[in-house]
Each structure stands twice: as structure tokens, then as C-alpha cells.
Image (cartoon, rainbow, N blue to C red):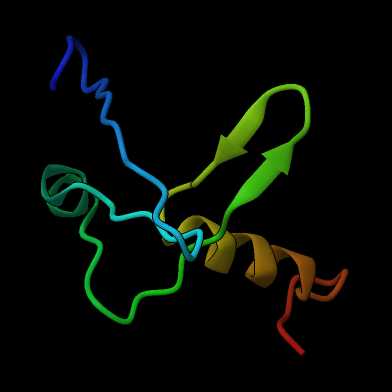
Length: 72
């Protein structure tokens, strides 16, 4: 289901093993392929978020960059 301005909403059912299937449209929109690793962020009050798959690579790159701006 697509809303305005690139906003989407989907539903997923949790299986007996605690797994969910990401809807095909969501996989297509976000370029999620088999074997991709996703980062799940959780907040007990606000819920679970799955940021875009490249977001954690940028976070790690920034975290491991030296203070003079060079990678180590």
C-alpha cells in the first residue's frame, strides 16, 4: 500500500520460529535481496525500526574514522 511522498505501510505475520517475510513490494522499493543483512533497532516504547540497508555501513565508517579524518 503506497501513500503520498514515498511513505509506505505493509503488514507481516510472525511465524512459529519468530520469522517474518518482508513483503515483495518492500523488498523491491528498498532493494533488499536474498542474503542481505538488515539492522534492526529497537526501543521498548517506540518499537522496532529497520533503517535502509546502507545506513549501518555509513555509521560504522564514521565510527571508525580517525580524528584527523583518515580511515584506520
